[in-house]
Image (cartoon, rainbow, N blue to C red):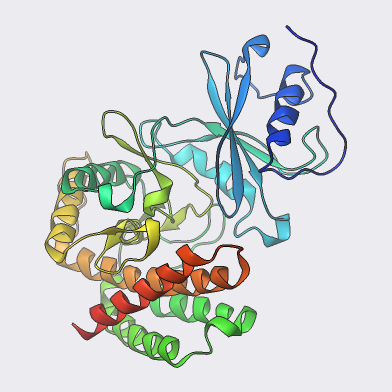
Length: 346
């Protein structure tokens, strides 16, 4: 084995190639270890796997084992959820459904100079939104049924006191955060009109949220958080928004009639019905057999679609103002607003 390079002191940029070398050196020298991973140190390779808004991911392989190191791109106080929440979520994730966290260092006092989360590796690719056909969507529905099998009486973050979901309250809270933190993206007549009309739809949907069964959910299952392998099996990554919540939220995020950017598959109303039918059939086949009426599930899915797409449009509007190449985000905002308005006027 060649002599490892020394580990340079100081903070790192988790997206730069030098970070991969630093991680490789830390693993080979034992400065960073993964309990029970059994890595063969002299065979290790490290390669960049991808980078999102919260984390940069590095793939560690020794020829037999594969692990993913996720390094935060923001200070802890700016992360949307604590890293510990994603680590705790691993116990709810079936191995065949997605990646699972196996180790964590939530501090920065280590050889990498930053916190990190280690998870299992899920082989495959993130597909373009246009590549999601009806067969793949139905396979996704069946995977969601496996994920949603555990039942809970109340919703909320893992390990926290639970409560019933107030869909209008969730929308109001999210909109208020944007109005307070980034008023530049909400101070717009079109945004105000969309918010008013969406809220009215949510008020009308409130009865469908009463007395529902909650489950463990991913919480951010847009198309870019689903990896599809060679056998066309969808599996899930990036669990930072995992919580106990409404299964209809996970069902809403993959796509629908409200779309914009690479995050959402375009689905006709008929395709959404087929997707939900596959989900309900998979739930009915499970041992507990708890299935709610499809029309009630559809109304909640539609409500979550409005909430998520609208609040995401505010996030993308903000990104279009701060990133070096805003084109993707600006285009997404235009399409989301157009399809939101068409959905509300239908």
